Amino acid sequence: VNRYWCERAVLPGGVATGVLVEQDGGAITSVVAGVDWPVGAHRLPGLVFPGFANAHSHAFHRALRGRTHADGGTFWTWRDAMYRVAARLDPDRYFRLARLVFAEMAVAGYTCVGEFHYVHHQPDGTPYADPNAMGSALIEAAREAGIRITLLDTGYLVGGLDADGYVGLAPAQIRFGDGDVDHWARRFAALASGCAAPHARIGAAVHSVRAVPDTTLPVFAAVTDGYPVHVHLSEQFAENQACQAFHGRSPTRLLADAGLLRPSTTFVHATYLSDVDITLLGASGAGVCCCPTTEADLADGIGPMGELAHAGAALALGSDQHAVIDPFAEVRGLEYGERLRTGWRGRFTPAQLTRIATENGHRCLGWPDAGRIAAGAVCDLVAVRLDSPNTAGARPDQVVLTATAADVDTVVASGRVVARSGRHTSIPHAGPAMIDVIEELMS
Ligand SMILES: [Zn+2]
Image: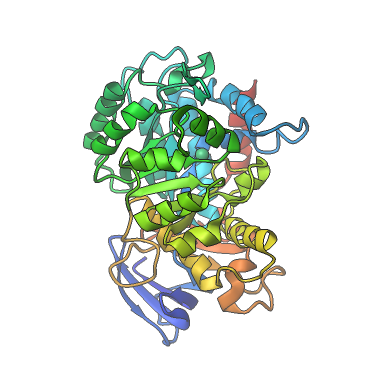
């Protein structure tokens, strides 16, 4: 389809009616508002948003949804359950699971995913014949699901940090590690030079200051110059305590000293920050990716997102462990977290929230050409019904705080219709297939 007509659309200047979007080869060539539905144009109902970016994902965590609520615990006990799933992955299984997870994202309105990928090697740490077999499986899974991917290849060299220093990889973590930073850099270079798929871009990640020693951080910073880099930052207060005890500095300061506070870096979570950390992050032009449904699910806490935005950080959103895959739930989680924390409503305007979930997310994944409905941008269109029982009566300019993924009707990603009437066009029975893969992983 080369012409889409939107009843209403969220354009950079606000909501417009009767919007004709023309595209060629996946890029928008023109946008005209205030026109009647022309013959032959594909009609998109309701309110059409730009594509949502899922800026932080670990696809395999989806297998744990609805399976960890009975036993209580903390982030750290949840992590043990997550490691048991990681141990069961191989390239074929990961492809089959991720294809369905990415299809679920596509139907929910995500047109791009940032996959923070660290399950690199065989369970005993031996590389596969192709050392990037797992990453390639994820790229192929996204292609089949019809969405774009930025594979954030993650360095994970040590098992943790405490007051006495770094500890070695635990048996469950062996397959995440490359031995040392040079081996990681070599594998990353092969991945980056071998990736020619138009739907995929390559980035890097430092798992956290717990998993990459301070002495190797400057090497990471040098090797990844020019790529998007993501880092888990201060998701748990224990990380701050260990870093302060051993390094005498906060994780933010440690990463700043290594040269990683730069506009191409995105800090994920940023839950426990001092005022100094917030100022450092904001002034650097770095991004911050908040994962509200995961942070709530894992009892992480609520980060200072309003202060970070005010200081200059560009916020983005991710569904992280996929307890929920719904871009609107993340939007509400961000704003509701601010309301609960501050006692004020409307800390972010609906327009700001939309930009955070679309344009900012794409930019932090290395797709500055996506996330808005404008000529020259990638043609991603997400049509949300305004006549569902849930959205009925809502003002279009406030629907981003009202809709759920179930209200998404049609999704166009890179110019192609990937979901229609709430179903994936090429993977229509994702639910039963997902049950099979998850039972295989848990058996
Ligand atoms: Zn994460």
